[in-house]
Length: 342
Image 1: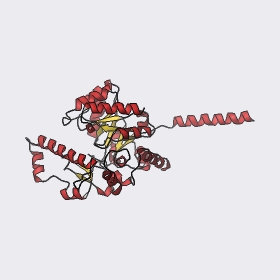
Image 2 (image 1 turned 45 degrees about the vertical axis):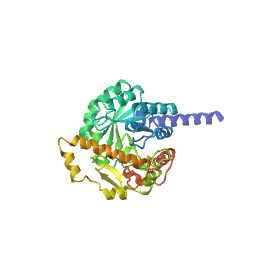
Image 3 (image 1 turned 180 degrees about the vertical axis):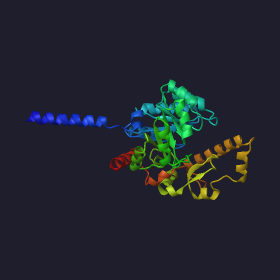
Image 4 (image 1 turned 30 degrees about the vertical axis):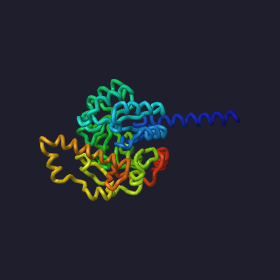
């Protein structure tokens, strides 16, 4: 009798293992060998080594903007420090247009250190894809429409980061409800949704309409591991989706920020002189570079030290941030909500 029950138990365990193996995981989990389909999005000035380590330990992955490091030596050291601390995938975000003077050196470091993936933004990823693939590094490309998505797919991108209009930072102009189905219909490579999600049920909804996984940033600003000021973190707790506005004051292109009293005072659109200089054929290149530099300096001051003149970059998903927590707890909440969602 004992042998009979033992055989039944063994058969049941085998059945459960077979059933588990036949349930397909989200594409992003398969692509990067992670437990839960989230990339902690690369956030200018916010993302750091501690956040990536915590993300990997929590069963997700993350990326850091190369721009967060002043030199390529600092970038290389950061990559090596992460590798020493955890065994798991992580990536680097590269600005691949001419505004990034360190681009080629940053790409070389990423390839030499054989990071798991690169996320490209603002420009043609052709060279990045060619060089990264030689080193066995995957390349995911930010896209906001089908036209550009088809171009990067043809160049050999491994996945698309579908930046919708609910994203933080430089957002797209199409809702995720339109963008993801459009990209899924037009392209064969995985589509990773970026923007507007801050709950486990939101993750499940994105996967149900065809997303391979999600890139999520703003909900991790108010984390213990983030190195930004407590005021910035608390702002993500105190403000919500209705407080997010788009401004062209920072970089010349629309960027989402929290609508603080200072942002309300200076306005969110360029004045007549700034608009004139932005359109002047001779001066627009230099004026845009100056605007970008000034805007990034403004963000840097606000991120690490609160003053009256505060501009904090964030997306609508701060609606779901209710307290400052360790990344492990944020991910655990998302997993729990995902498991309980219909």
